[in-house]
Amino acid sequence: MKFTLEGILPAILTPFKRGGNEIDFDKAAAWAEELARRGVHGIFMAGSRGEGLLMSIEERKQLACLL
Image 1 (cartoon, rainbow, N blue to C red):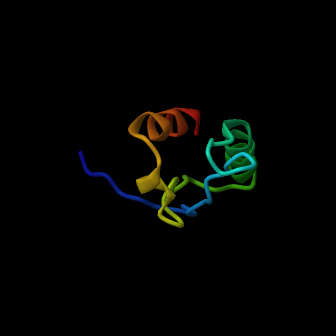
Image 2 (image 1 turned 45 degrees about the vertical axis):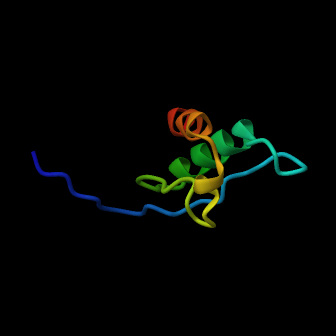
Image 3 (image 1 turned 60 degrees about the vertical axis):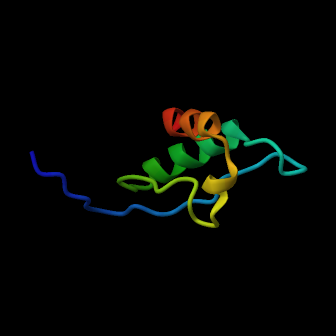
């Protein structure tokens, strides 16, 4: 099976709560829903500013499942 990436796949900022120590999962979900509503085909998450490397594996999994 061949896998092809097509369409609009923006790298989005990961929203953090005030203080920057916790991911704001509610904001991330709302943002993803809004982008989907506007016709985005996929999302490149946790990588636009390198924040993915600072997040735990569990946080990345939670974010991936949410989006």
